[in-house]
Length: 122
Image (tube, rainbow, N blue to C red; front, side):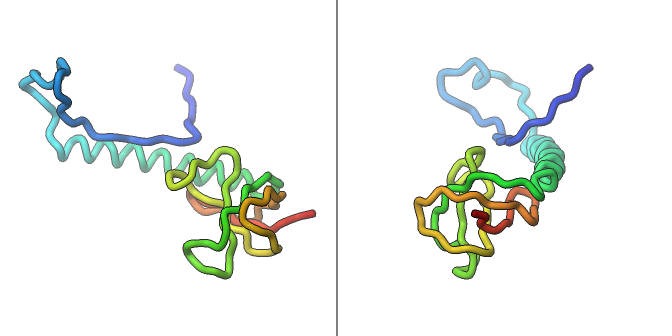
C-alpha cells in the first residue's frame, strides 16, 4: 500500500439530507463515534501540516499582503498561493513595510501548525 499526505483537509460530519438514499437507512453511526473519527483525522492532519510548515523555514515565498494582522497590529498578515482566505492559515510578516494588496517576497523564519512567520526580502 502506498501512503500519501494531503496539504489541506476538511472533515464534515454526516447529516441527513432530504431526497438521499442515506436518509432512509435505519442504522446510523452515533454522533460520539463521528466526533471521535473526525478528531482522529484532524489530529493526523495537524501533524502533517506542522511538518510541512517546518519544511518551509528558510524558503522564500510570494505573499499577497492583506493588511495588519487580526492578532496584533504589530504584524502584517497575508497569504501565499496555497492559502484560502478565512479557511486556511496565514503568513505573518514581522519585519518590513508594504501595503495591502502588494505581492512581496517573504523569507519564512518560523512555522506554527497552520501559520508561517517571516520577513520581507528584497
